[in-house]
View 1 (tube, rainbow, N blue to C red):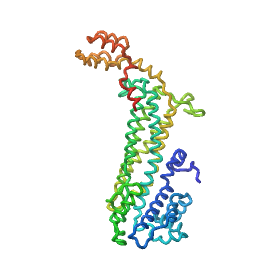
View 2 (view 1 turned 90 degrees about the horizontal axis):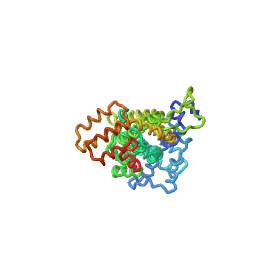
View 3 (view 1 turned 60 degrees about the vertical axis):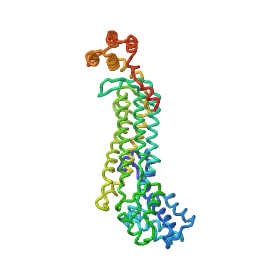
Length: 454
């Protein structure tokens, strides 16, 4: 096996160990395996159709053998398919030849050799194989990785629910929040994005060269081929698309890639915010023995996991958005531009997974620093101006906003100067005492409750 050091892509080189679970779904060998599955299931389904008088139903043992071809498909099998493809220069036709070769010694299956790939165009096999591939990648790899990030953020939201911090809008000191509430915001966003990814119904078709069952009806005009195809696609747990050209138009794939990109954008937003909080000292990073932060500055512990995550998620989104823009476009009844693009689905998902894994790695290193957060709050008493002017509005005091603006804007307000201002207000004494009791670290509204509720 070639060394990862010689890989052209870092996904198969530097990061290949982290992405091994995705390779089981999205490698070329995996795609060939999914094609084998579609071809064998099609043959099994055809044999069960009474109208195909020349094809007898397979015995239970033969069905087991046919399904074993996909279930036990090995790297050696994939290499043999590629060897056949080197002669045919056609990847799907190579599957047909490989299946006939594999079952040449099996009398019952070899007798049905003429019905392997019966009435199919290559795209009948490919669109279903890609849908199955993406369905498994979504369920087995991508969503579990995203769930780990969501679970970690939820744990941080609960742990830090009542840890107050200075909010920043436009980079400036703003109404306080809690660190837990800020984590809860992201949990909610990612949960919504996850639901969108999970909700995309992957579609499929198996209706021939231009989508009209021409060859099917030429051979067996008495069979309800549309109903047969619908049942076959549904049996693969895919949604049947009755209206296609030669290719299934990939609209569902575009929806899935768009949904993945939206989740990635939320993670990028998180990466940048956490990076900023580390810079402010709101989070420390757990030290890992032997790790070096800088080649020249020994003191540094850099937030590299969040930087790696942001960079890889950006690459992922560039590819995912190209996939979603390109795949639904095909000239007339078919061109081949989708084929070469689809070969990069694993690359797009690979960068997504890598970004997710890096983000989680960074989150697991974080240690909150409440002392640093409290220090910022203690030096920004002006953030209470919002509370004071809002109470002033309640009691009809003149120009409350303008008075507080004159007192606070661009000035260093102390606890004493703010409380002196409150002491002069013509408001009920109970309200005055409530305002005087406020501090920046207690002025957090429902933040704690919202964080604990997520």
